[in-house]
Amino acid sequence: MKKIKPVPSRHKPRGLTILHEDLDIIVVDKSSGLLTVKANYEDKKTAHHVLTSYIRRGSTLSRKQIFVVHRLDRDTSGVLVFAKTYDAKEKLKLQWKNVKKTYVAVVHGILSQKSGMITSYLAENEDYEVSSVEDPKKGELAKTRYKVIKESKKYSLLEIELLTGKKNQIRVHLSEKGHPVVNDDKYGGNHKVEGRLALHSQFLTFNHPYSGRRMNFEAEVPAYFNELLQSHASGLRIQDHRDDLNFT
Image 1 (cartoon, rainbow, N blue to C red):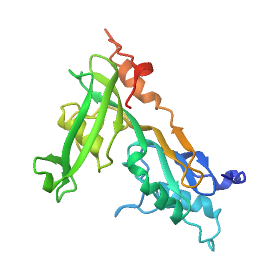
Image 2 (image 1 turned 90 degrees about the vertical axis):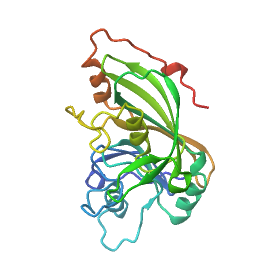
Image 3 (image 1 turned 60 degrees about the vertical axis):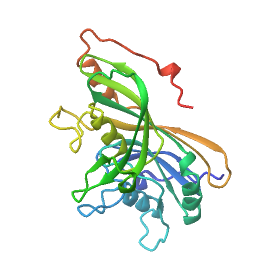
């Protein structure tokens, strides 16, 4: 697995941090507010566009491409992997059900069950909003496993394993459970506070598409998450189980 040569600072991508790059894949820590791929209202301020420009090193004649493997919502930060060849993308897609995806989120309220699994069938309506439906034929199976790490009087910090990867899955499941992610404009109701969406892709673990080597990447949890908890730390009850977390 060859590493590439160092890149001049003028060509380094903005809005994300490169965690790993070789000839087949590029793994980044995406910032909140940056789209993964283009949308109707934006086609350039995206991780895909930024990385395409990066690998082309400013050459308008370059045909190098970046291939999308998975996506993060615009306001979700954290680990994101792209393929640098079509072949690598296909190999990653084949193993995606076995890829371990771990998130952290700050949600409103105190959960009565400190760990558990949320399972439902998700469907999207004409307004592009996702919700759970009772009829399995009308939705796609979604499974979200969670565990409380810390809690204050007003917020809870969760570690979440995404067992399926449906659109807005974590946000919908937590909202329907009565504990929406902080600053979720779409599913959070009228609970807006100062700051960004409190959802972050912390770990991504998969096998390299060619060497087969197991690889684990981590994007540091934004300081804002702890600041939220500390902002209501009067009488803070800390449930710190990080060393005990085990989703296997």
